Length: 357
Image (cartoon, rainbow, N blue to C red; front, side, top):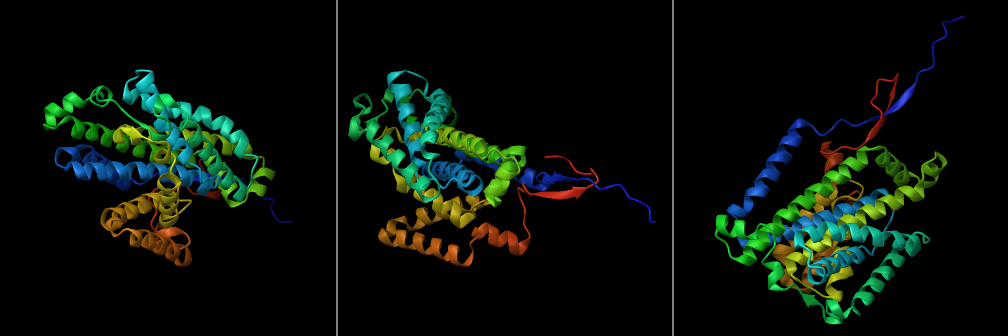
C-alpha cells in the first residue's frame, strides 16, 4: 500500500499590498495637490473641488452598488441632508463650519438607520425606486422648514463664511481675498475627504468585511449559505456611505454658501452623474471611479457650454462603454495590460502558507 499523506489544508490569502512604487507615486501626487493652491488660479481650485467631491461620491456609490449590491438612485438624500445639517448647525447652532462637517456626517448616519429599515424591505428595482422616493420625502420636508429658508432656500451669512478657521492665515500667506481663501480651505477639505474615502474603501475591501462583500457581489444566496450575515453587512455599508456622503454634502454647500431643496436633493447632480462616473470607469473596482471622475470632469469642463449636445455626448459615451466595455474603461485597460494598482483580490493557497484576511 502507498504511503498515506496528510490532508492538505487551505486558506484565503489577501493580495499583496500596493507596491512601493504605487505608494510613492500616490504620496507625490497628494503632496503636489496640497501645495497646488500656491500657484493655481481660483478657477482651477474650484474645478478641482468639484472633481474631488464627485470622486468621493462615486467611491461611495461604487461600494454600495458594486460590492453590496444596493443599487441606490437616492443618494442625493444624504447630500442634501448633509448640506442642510451644516446650515442648521452653523446658522441656528452657532457651530464652527469645519466642525459642522463631521457632525453632519454623524447625523446623516443616524438618519440612515430608520431610512434603511424602510428601503431594506424592498428588492431590486423596487429598492432603487424606494431610495429615490425617500430622497423626495427629505426634499419636501426640508422645503417646509422656514428657519432654513423653506422652498426658496437660504444662504450662509458673511459672519460664518468669513470666519472659517484658517482663512486669515491663508489670506496673509497667499495674499488672497476672503472668498478665494475660503475656496482654498474648501479645496484642502475636499482633497482630504476624497483621499480618506478612497483609503476607507480600500481598507474595507481588504478586511474580512470586504471578503463578505465580495461573496455577496458574486452570489448573494451562496454567501448567505456560508454564514455571511447579508443584512448586517449591507446595513453597515449603507450607514457608512451615508455618513461620508453627508460630509461631502456639507462640504459642497459650505463652499457654495447657499442651499435650496431642489439643488440639494437633485437626482441629476448627485446620483445620475455619479452613476455615470462609476459605470464608465468600472463598477466594482476602486480605480474605476477615479478614471470616470477625471473623464466626467474633462467633459464638463470643455463640453458643458454646448448645452443639450453635452448631455447627448454623455449618454452616447455611457452606451458605448456598456456595449463594448461592460467592465468599464479601467476594466478594459486592466484586462488588456494586466494593470493592478490597488488590488483587493483573494486566492486559495495550501498548507497554511497564507496570511489570513
